[in-house]
Length: 398
Image (cartoon, rainbow, N blue to C red; front, side, top):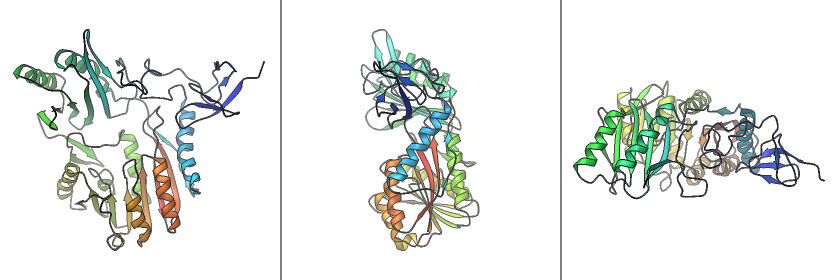
């Protein structure tokens, strides 16, 4: 009989990996596994926090304790950097978001003969897991799961609907898509639902884009102490605590930089956190986010100026970048290949790069390194708790 294999690390998709290189689903470092695949839990193997774990596609790592989760987030980021020959001068502690802090969620609902199912999709499937709980969600979002299920059962179409929830200053914004409201009855029911649940806003997309059907007062989200108008469906960092951590890092690392370009700025998540003692140009392509940032910048002392520009098609050129003391960028998952090439060709000496994809970040970081930048600071961020999705904030200087 062969000796059991020891699990020594987690792979990128969450499988445990043994000393011999074997991948074992559901195992975590410190576990052992025998030839038949039977797992003997070790000291870092904990009971899953959610009854839907292994069925729901939202979480992959609920059997791992916080020490393993922290190590996983750190190693994903550090290995991406080392894969491009980069070593941070300072690796900062991992920021791991706690349970019940996720302030946005994308759910699916389906009316059935017995009522409705509502939740996330199963891993690798279109089947919807009928949620009874979700320990990653902020309690105000989780509290809407049952009422939304009842609403879909009573008024939903005979097709899959999308439900996006976002926690704003005034409460929860709910966006329904592929959800026709035909006739006065369903429309009144939607208004009653929004009123009874205390929604900040309800939008319905009937195939022509999101239309607001309920919004008692203008919906905002506070970014670094500044209330910013929140367009329907606008992007926010997943948790408030991770946003605060990354903004604080960026503000500290930019130091004495007085004129800063915030690229892929969105609503101004970083721009408003950097404004004290600085002028910040917030550059964003998505029009609604740009306009919200622009309007707020004008009301908040004029330290944040907004520019509407598609940085994928028209990146800032070296002659434009040379006017800034530093640059911050927070691009989508694909990274910022074109814009980074222009930064590398400019005279900018300090760059803060925030990323939701260590792989594309590492590719871009290698371009900066080739242009003379050094990776000074690197902080891994795990705001999507119990998932394999990892983020980071980094500082480059030359």
